[in-house]
Amino acid sequence: MLTLHRASTGPAVLVHDDRIAGLGAFAELAAAHPGARVRDWGQARLAAGRLAADAVQLLEHSYHPDPREEAGTDPVPLPADLADGHYGGLGGSARRGVQRLLAAGTTALVGPFGAPAVLAAVRRSGLPVVAAGAAAPELVVGGRADFAVLAVPAAENGPCLATVLAGRIVFRRR
Image (cartoon, rainbow, N blue to C red):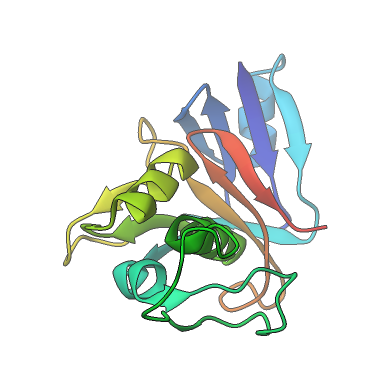
């Protein structure tokens, strides 16, 4: 299935299944692929997304509180006595941490991950894991369709409106 992602700033991205099939001006891509479904993101910019170099620290050594807890919403140092039954233990914390990373427009994580519960959460998310020193993600024709939709005018540090991994929207801000 072809989907043409359009934003007010920067190139449009044509996605076929899980790959980038084209990058460029929306009008040109739309004319070349008239049957493509169009997803218009409005006042936004499509970007390759963020590489989380600190992912091991964030997911294996920090606790991401459950919203039902009174611990707030920001990550805190991982408690030494964290029990599996405590809001999902390390696995639950890692799942909440992954959601936080996706909400920030993260499209790749620097690993490796040693904790099985964290590794399971990362694998389920679809986020690719790369070695330390890897290059930041790029939008490349033929490459995996991983990108973030960032609000403009503050596109560089503005809020992430959506994150797409392998052509699927895995996070969308409400």
